[in-house]
Length: 109
Image (cartoon, rainbow, N blue to C red; front, side, top):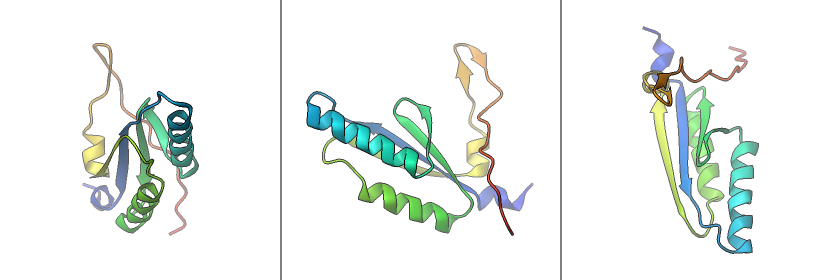
């Protein structure tokens, strides 16, 4: 058991934003770009994930998400530990995939 499995966190952002008007499409694109700019990776079309080395770092990113929320649409923020993330099973069709490749992140300490 690694101690860090419970300290390292993941943020999953789920969203369903309206894209019927030009303004709504612009808000959708802006929200998506801001997530990417903040280090999130697209897991699926409406699910973005981010690895955080600590709970404090996770709280910073959650605050940023809350500041960039669009005026319309549904957005969900799920915070889980690295241990819980590692238990996720991923399938492509009926074929089980080996799992999500963790991003490479340098830690100085």
